Structures are given as structure tokens and as C-alpha cells.
Image (cartoon, rainbow, N blue to C red; front, side, top):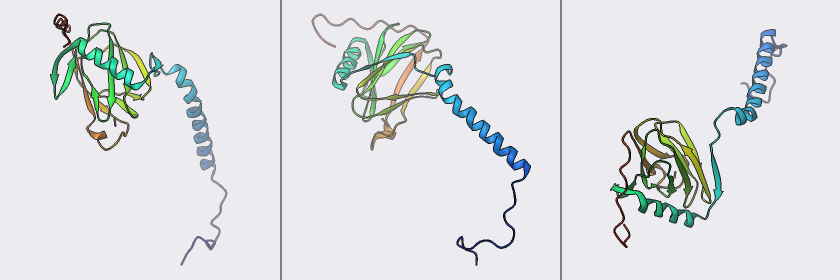
Length: 192
Ligand code: CUA
């Protein structure tokens, strides 16, 4: 019987073969390349969000989202308001346990400033089926300049575990080719 406490029999230890040494050197050199890529990619990779970040009180942000929703609301689906902001608008989206609010209807080829924040815990903004990922944190308003370049019906999938309903946290962004209809005028003196 062999155990790890007893030396194996025979001459098991041989000096490393030349080929093995070469592989160790290549692997080490590659490790160094990858190590150097981490800081280099930060500056050269074009992967950093082109936006600004501000601190914000979650409740204040929620009010802003509500205001934005009331202003540009064009309909409702699955109990969520559908909001179609005009070109160039500041778009406010909030993640909360367990939904993305509201549903957005954007226009292709038009720039928006997309604000992202959370009401409660950390959420992950993952725009399916595209490979766009962004952490959404309570207390921070990330304003990203975005120009949808493809029309389609996109899903926002939460990719940060945020509690028991995490897997149900799916939102919607519809990108259309036609210009967004102007929002209906608010009734005189009233709110929508
Ligand atoms: Cu929100 Cu997971």
C-alpha cells in the first residue's frame, strides 16, 4: 500500500527535461505579459465607461426616475410604464429588488445619457443579447453616454446576485428605427 507519508520506491526524482524548462520559461513570460496587460488595458482597452459618476441618495434618485417616467411615459406593459424619451434626453433607469424600472423605448442612432443606479443593493446591468455589463450600485448615479446602433428588443438581465428574486429581475429596452412619438401633452393643471 502506498501512502503520502512514505517515499515512493526507486529513482522517481529526475532533473527536469530541457523541454519542460522551456515550457516553464514560456509560461512565466506569458504570465508577465498578462500581468502587464491589466494596467495597460485600463488605459488602452477602450473598455472604460464614457460617463461620469456622482453620489446620490437612493430615494432622491428614485424621485428623479419617477419624474422622468411621468414626463415621457407612452404606455404600459407587464405592469411597468413604457417610457420614450426624446433624442438627447437624460434617461433614468433604476434597479431594485427585483425589477428594472421603467421599460425604455429608445431610438436607433440617437445619443442619450443613460443614468443607472440602485434603490437597495448591488445589481448587475447586463444587456442581453449584447455583451454589455455594468455594476449598478446604490448611492451612485452613473451617467453613460450611449447611442443605440442596432434596433431590437433587448433585455436587461441582472447579473449580480441580489437576493431570492434575483433570477426574475429582467427589464426591457426597445430600440426602434422610427422616431419616438412626442409624449402626450400633460392635461392642463394635472399630472399624468
Ligand atoms: Cu438584481 Cu440580481
